[in-house]
Length: 402
Image (cartoon, rainbow, N blue to C red; front, side, top):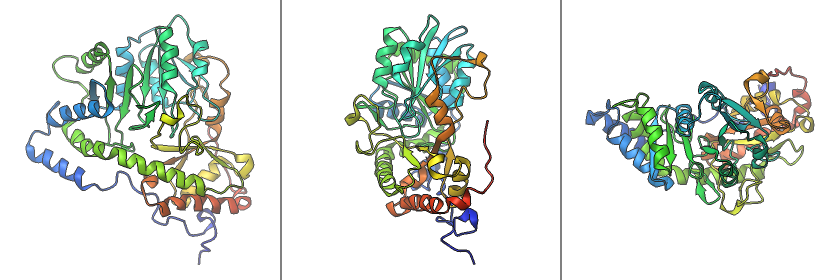
């Protein structure tokens, strides 16, 4: 018989025997909306009633005059860069720790990524690094809010606009977050949202763009439509599924934010192995932002700095042990400068903090944060169990990535 005190990786009983919660959660309103869309007979249209309504609701929700949808968040980033007229020979500044598809999208336009370091505490793009990165070919900045952290976008915009550089604010991981008193995606020249399968609003796939400037909006629309019909649209069924989710987003984000506080308070103090990318002494507000009292994160993932030396086991074994307990954690992104030829990017300054994020970031996936406080505390219980048996776990083989 298994000893429940042992980590599941050593033969014990998992803290969550049923495993991580499955996302998206069953939702009667989403099911009803899909059924109604099918029954209407118009669900095969490229730009039908639900897509038009969703675009209007996204614009109203975010307080912007223009919003348009498309087939993916990655496509939305490309449309945003095209609206800013990024093309061959141009440079796009971005954090060296970011979603890889953003890097690849810049390359697909014939432009070159310019990588800057991230803030040492928050893991987000550091505005203090921007000015030194700008050159005569710089056309745009991509700033992504990652792992529950928030980039101080108003600082980015202020610096970029002094140099006639546009800003793409990637809010794919931060739908409904508030940054400096404004919703994520509404401070940059173009905001980008994603409705991918694991996102806070999900349609399996999909994306959207937010605009204040009608000219940028029209450029993006013209490229996306390429004639009379949009070539990569969001479908009617996807839009129908997203509309009831959008209405619930503020309440869901508030629940996740409260549960993050609950979780961080419950984590073991010793060893100090996990430090969240968001501070709790500001009521969950992100560190390093200029206007912290007007910030409110949205937790698609909750990022932590993991200190392998303090715990005594590698990050890979730590992640494997927590996953065996039924906790959905992973290593963070691979930093964009690691394992790539330097010919594929220009590095501006040292990338020490991005390298540290590459080596030490651990992310918790969001579904558990929407459960009860007792279930959220199971995450801390699993961490404590792994810590207690870290000497035994340290003997297990570790796989490292390049």
